[in-house]
Image 1 (cartoon, rainbow, N blue to C red):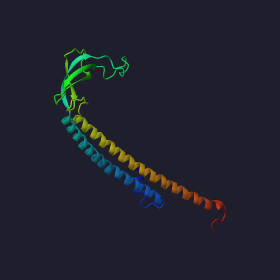
Image 2 (cartoon, one colour):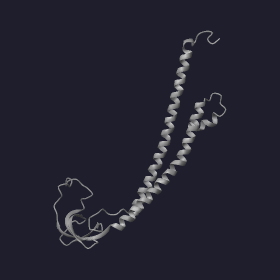
Image 3 (tube, helix red, strand yellow):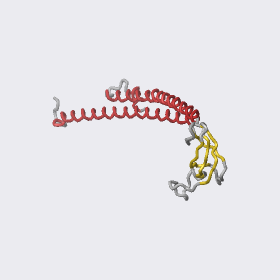
Image 4 (cartoon, rainbow, N blue to C red):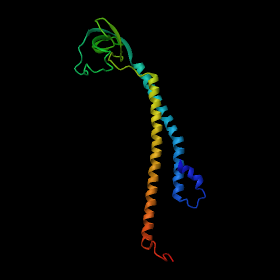
Length: 201
């Protein structure tokens, strides 16, 4: 912002170097790109993510079914389970052997994590399966998909702004390096005669 405000102050300043104006114009261009391009990128990426995720939501809800499973018997703790003294999100679930009928009419049986505190044979609970009765995760809901799309758009906008600012800093760094190189060359030419009486006369 300081470089941009310098555009007005330096417009007729005899001490203004060409590189000063170049840096100010570069900062202005970068600011305009961040304000215009970054939101546009965010909207485009968010819109594309929303379309893809909502399509996935529809496909999952079409392919997955909620069926009723019946407890056959309770199973012991899986050897892969975490330390029983640690508290996890699965503490409220119990590992049971359950049977269920798939949407295509076939019978299935297998170990399931049931949201039952004290499961007994014959207790019923709901699980998600595909059309052939294989257990699957719960389908993505529309609200969660929209949240992910918004986050994707916001992240893309931030990334675009960061890339613009990174490019601006890289260009300024190269301009400063060239400026210092020119100063070194000027000092090497003026160095032997610096401070001598009558130099340049």
